[in-house]
Image (tube, rainbow, N blue to C red; front, side, top):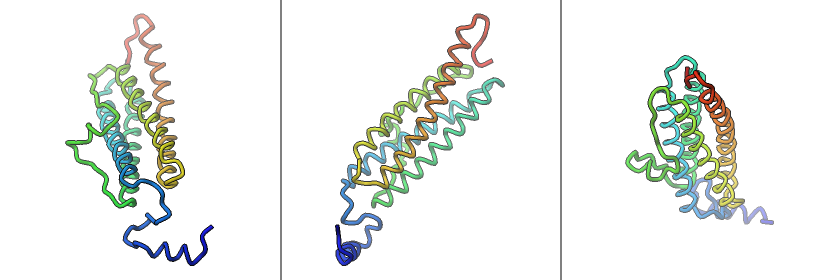
Length: 186
């Protein structure tokens, strides 16, 4: 246990580092690299959700489109939180569009109007990739950076909720395509 004087002396060391104190045990460069991969993945995911929501035109697909728009908004919010944490760690979030897709774990894919099954499946795959990536990131950070870990855990919970909803949507789409005479998305 540190004494009061030791804590004060350590807090006075490198004041420009903001919340990064000498007791922070995380590898800042590696953590920032990881957070930027997650940031890129959320930005690409948000763009994909938005693109897919826009192409859903059938009146019966409106609830799906609204859900996809909400997921896009949530992912953009998550990316902003990651960028803020990266800044707290002394670095900058990397939003350069030329490099986003290369860093992203989520692949961007478009679909034509009416391919609701493809849209749902692609987004379910993307969210499951993010769930796995966030789980790995939480384990890797462990107790070395509790603030980043809590942020990642919060994003993980959100992604698991999205995966649950998309899984239910996927089941509905599969059921609709298996009924003779019923067109999916109508």
